[in-house]
Length: 99
Length: 359
Image (cartoon, rainbow over all chains, first blue to last red):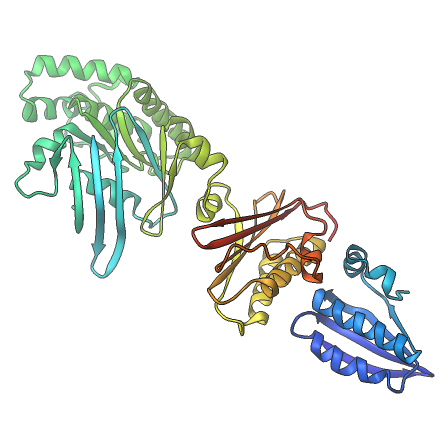
């Protein structure tokens, strides 16, 4: 998985490509969680992300909790139908802010 | 009628049969099926010492055939064999082919032998070919003559070594029909075949051979409808499967997933189908205990009507999905069935889903 970080005004955007799974989830965790120390708006762009497993969901949940704790926001955009189904099936569609 | 004890057969350093113990009772119709190269024909040829076993015992009607003192030619009169390549005497007419064994080996007068031969030719539908020579016959006709010749020796059992494999597909039916009629007459038979429908219809018992032995055996309804073991199922249902063995905690996750993705692409799985397979394999791989080798198998029949992931792992009896962890939720959601069994120290967890089910 590749993570590409860009700044769009106040918004920090991470564009993920590839697979968010057992082997790559730790990389997102290391990149995303410390970001909440400074950023107030974080967007995860899933347009090039093909796959998310439970390991990826855990990191997204950690991100959501970190955002709440720091008074910041975490938004997911361009989520594929398959990944959206995973969110719905696990109840994450209710927890995460998906646009 | 036939008892086989711990039969082994090697060709050089290659162990083809690694230990078969079984019996064939009078009146049984045994078909021997399995992938090519698993020793089916070798097993059959070892029963009548055409290819004697390297080790083990074969007894026929109480006589030990592996004992050098046994007169094997006498025994072979009672054990007829039909070969893939017919093995007719090309220089003799059909009638002579059927008489020669009777007169020379059984000492039956020619007139009586001819009478029997003509009766048998009628049985296999070839009365009018009595004076023809083998070269004038089609493959199917040659094989029917070979069956009649075998019967002319009044055997107690008939061994068929892939009797339809050398035939044009249009001629398979005429030969299997003759064998089916023989089966109805009560002849004891052992048949090596690749014709699955025929095996299903004719047999009283099926031996599925794999891994150098009898991998699974049972009546046709069990073997063809509900086989118990993985390789039998794959063979019977022409199931496509991807198997990965995890040997330690530090297993190569990327290799496992990349090969699975490739397998899904090769077999033209839908995007959602491939996604779900990957998800279930990944979650189960993370949940499975790895202190002993653990296997993950993703499989589906050719028509992709049902997908199955099987996780086999050692240790105590434990259903790794009996919790509310995210991995377990992921696996259990949107599935047709989830079953857990424990037998002989191995857990077996089977997850199935249908193509129209959501991820």
